[in-house]
Amino acid sequence: MKLNLKEQLRMLALMLALPMVFVACSDDDDNDPTGGAPIVAQKGVFVFDTGNQGKNIDGALSFIDEKTNTAINDVFRTVNARSLGSTVQDGVILGQNLYIAVSESNTIEVVDKNTLVSVAQIAPTAEQGSKPRDIVTDGKYVYVSMYSGHVSRIDASKNVIDKTVKVGPNPEEMAVANGCLYVVNSDGLNWEAGYVNGKSVSKIDLASFAETKIPVGLNPTKIVADASGNLLVICMGNYSDVPASIWKISSSDAVEDWGKPATIMAVKGNSLYTVYDSYAGADAVEYTVYNTLTGSVEKDNFVASPVDSPSGIVVDPDNGNIFITSYTLVGGFASYTTPGYVNEYSADGTFVKKYDVGVGAVCMTFLK
Image (cartoon, rainbow, N blue to C red; front, side, top):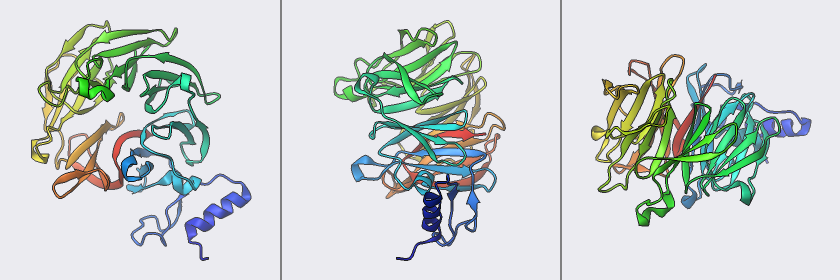
């Protein structure tokens, strides 16, 4: 059996019991820009590829390397010789480690942020919740929303879950602000009943881990915190007669419905970058920046060359560059089985580069 260069390197690393760096090999891809040189992740963007469980497409991890301006796909498998799992959702970096939520495999994969070598695999017990969804950090602990209706805390010094609190049904995204963890409760599995219990944000005091609820609009799915401690929430409505809308929760818990539509968003300082996809075609997608303090529009159409079917957005906290993930169109419709892509834009919205990534690319996080 003839082994390619990647397989030879992996076998050598296993024989020597040495950690691997991930490798892009020229004999695997004639267009490989690295020429087969070993790569260590140092600075760039991790892209979390959901995959498609129904079509037996596992989730994966891609990395956009700022040094080479190239994307390398399925890097976890390349390094660890196994799949990351089914339905990769999100990831966050704390210290030397990258924590990855893998929902349908019910695991949190912990890898070295530079070498991508697996450090630990955390499997929640029934009491700690199931189906990890979103994952954030306060700089000391890692917090995971569980679609079962729980939020669990990971002690990063031991990579074990040490606290769990029950929240609302089917929690999605989270944000840390004001000494608290804010979690949106979507009631997403109760769509036939109109998401009737999905009208709240759970506020968890980080010191006591006690939970209270803040009422918001129907079916909240996304949340970010601005530089002033305000929380911005996208309530998706019922995809019919209740439209998607941005809600604001002030640092003093005052609640306001902005009445402005959005489907994905990111924040930098006190600027909220929103994308509203009405699913009427790429030309109908709205790209708007709002001031989080006043709700006023700072900029319309903030990117040139919009993507086909936007699915996620992040803004570089350093230089303001914007990264937007997109599904690929097949027959004029978003394909959930075809590899997607990421467009990078400069801070002024000028198109920089397109990166081909994995299937179902939605969430991203920066490696600095």
